[in-house]
Image: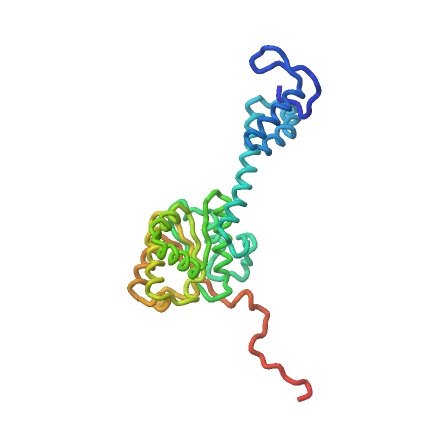
Length: 277
């Protein structure tokens, strides 16, 4: 019989069949074990599921599995929250919050496919190109948050922030260590490629980041520049071409279109007139 939901003082047999113990003692032991295992969800589930287990005639094994499943689910949820915090997103934006009526250049089917995160399992990339305000960063953030919730470690930063991080590591003589460390992340997000041009040294550091992850781990990249203008961004057509070659070899590339979502409905550039004129 499954355990009762609350102690009653009733004697029950011990697991080894020797002697007897009260439900109160059993509950106290369960609480102690749950604390020792740092499994509060299991303790909560044990009480809530006991009545259901008795009513539905669960076996002891079925009851145990149900309790453990609650603990696993709770740990997954808490782990996802921790991974989201560690990723350092500038804002929390989910895929579900996307305005699909404004999103152009990406179909619902393509979005659903990206949402499966199969590209991470395949160590492939996702690249979103398009003008400002077309949903690139929201897409990148939403997919990365879903990856966190699915158990993947994620790191998010703008292209300029990534270069600063790599430059600091290079100056400290630990660039290779930093690249190895980043290689352990199944997914990194590089946002806003193209907003700030890079000098030759910065472009080389950026290339090393991309090259180090090639066919080893996934990258999500957003850029307001088409690939044909990346030479301007990195100051070297050869470096840009080599970088693009590695990024797109195993990648889904989506070109987003339309006007800025943030600017919709606003009249910019209109000169106010005097009503008396």
